[in-house]
Image (cartoon, rainbow, N blue to C red; front, side, top):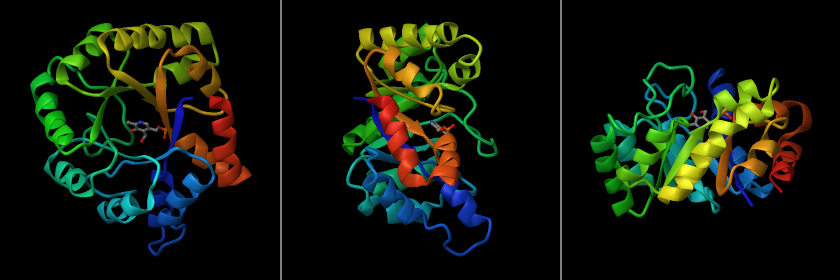
Length: 237
Ligand code: PXP
């Protein structure tokens, strides 16, 4: 079964709106696991506008499933990941001021850079994943960076899905076939929700993990976090 990793950045965004510790990000991480999620994802950005570096340190010992840290690998991010030693690090090529991740890596232009960073994480026994789009050459070249996994950037799937789900999934199936052929594992994320998740998971061969934040936390406002986590898990079964 594809694993569900819940991205809890949105909980931190609400907390930061008021200072203080409501809602409690640490409790949210613990609860996501308690409610059945197989992982917790955080994406600390350089300005710490949602998840803070200290949150990452505090959450680490509480997560017994899989802790995934996403971000652009600048020096402070690399130092944090090496200090905290999560199970997985997902490298994202986003500039510091971007609202949310909006592009995948160019695995050709950045091959040497990625190779170097990936090696350092792997030497510290941290599994690596790199965020990429479905372009065949990018997927094929991802293997040359030595990464354990790729994370397919699913925004385009989510956009096209309501109009034409077959067309929406097609490039992702092709990318997954290439990833399977070159031997890199497949994660996916961005804009996955209760409407589009099942079709994605059913059609992507070898999908290991999805990371979902915005839609799941928004659904939790109406149905509660426990119900939301359980409903997303149901879509993956
Ligand atoms: N994967 C990456 C690399 C992301 O940056 C994000 C958003 O922070 C997600 C997955 C999750 O996307 P969403 O919040 O739309 O579920």
